[in-house]
Image (cartoon, rainbow over all chains, first blue to last red; front, side):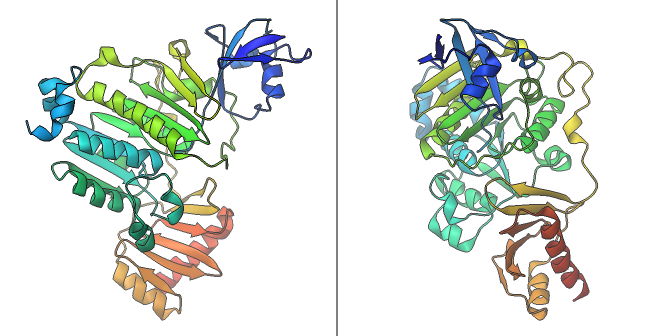
Length: 67
Length: 344
């Protein structure tokens, strides 16, 4: 599947089908993130069930805490 | 108006009227590390009226790569960051009243020193303190500019009480792991990027041009060239315990006991006593030496060494215990030193 993540074209393996799948694929399950899919913020309680589709625009903001 | 501000007065967004407002305004900065020093320098050069800056730490060589105000001499002298920052800021612009506070943010301290600020800049390095700051800023209805950076990533959002979502609203939305400490390091350009975004929002607030505020959560990864400006207004939670209709300011219920925390990435434990003390540095030095503990002081803090650990004791009774992340062990060493002082 081809999606855009943070403005960059990414080809995802076949088994990555949900927002949780993306978090697992990029190994950011432990990271503090806000994720937007096609301009809509995805509720964290729906990460497991929220499907992704070919052509989706995904934005992942990492809440970095240093200063 | 003095010609030193000529270039920013010529800028339409500020003008003579804006500058007149800027010189009357009071900005608070929580933290005098990488973000805090950059933000402070730009605001002081811009001629704000008053600056209150608080920090709990002292200058070390590892800070100099990205913390712009400090020099090798400050690190050699192990000056508290707030004191060193004030010294350099006053050399840059003596017209600004700089109030330096060596300590850790608390409800009482905020009420005394920051509740009259027009805007507060977050330059802390941990979410625990940010959530306390969030509750305080909302309680006193002061806009505050969240900022964070790590590696080549940076993030900022301007929180306007009763208008925008607050940090609790945003954090509530995230899967939260307690161990948010990351040891990835950081490069100076992303620090400067975040600080710049924070300062420009401060300018807009100081000249009261709220319509110019960005309104979005801004994220940047300078190494991978990712740039996101996200509208997060929908995350404002009417049931938020920090800013909702029935707010309880959950992060302000301070424990009456000692507070210990491990400083992220530093292998250092910070201890704050239940109440601020006012220790007599000279007296303490003499007592430590009498107990055959090595002691170096600089008028603001004492360095000693106990069981192979460097222990830094501040005037307000706080301590940093280096080379350990074990809070119980650090507390044992702290009590041992305090005990020796009390019974000397």
